[in-house]
Image (cartoon, rainbow, N blue to C red):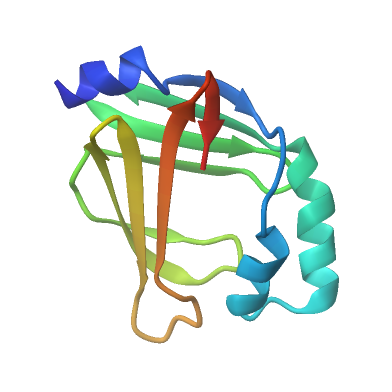
Amino acid sequence: MEVAGIEDTIAGVWALYRNENLDGYLKECGVNFILRKLAQAASLYVTMVISMEDGQLRIQNKGPKNTDHKAPLGTEIFITDLMHNPMKEVHTWDKNQLVTVSEPTPGSKALPTRVIRELVEGQLVM
């Protein structure tokens, strides 16, 4: 059911339409002013691809810095965020929302993060 829900709703290729409070988020994460401004400018060129492959969720971000994470839903994986911080991450599907919870591993400078992706009026909102 979860796989079908993702495939029927948010699976696809998505282009960034707008950013809201990216600077505030990055500032709280400890990113300096210059890198925040670069991230805001670069974010306008990001494409996200969400798919299900062999029963695993795959989220690819294509842009100035590419990421590619693939894991079964509900399974903790270890990743490195865009600032090279080691993180633990879990993706779940709940009430037509793709929820990603990321926790820093020991020694990481990152902050815990929860990202919710859902469709609103045909647009992917994150």
